[in-house]
Image (cartoon, rainbow, N blue to C red):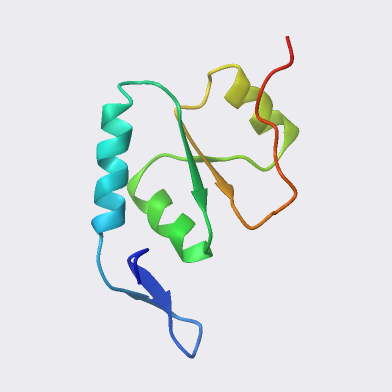
Length: 91
């Protein structure tokens, strides 16, 4: 429930609150133009984030390249992958 929404027994999303999204908005504003990376766990988290912010989902080598080049302001990636992800450019 801390995420602000839950799945019900039928798989539908029940929204509870927007506090987490409001805090994310504060974090993005405090970043003052610097890139922000968001890890999400549930699909409804991503859906709610995308409905409020322009977010690029990091799913390919091309999107990771764009992230490293500073071309993405706000990026999201699934935290359930579990295999790790290196977003650093080798110099």
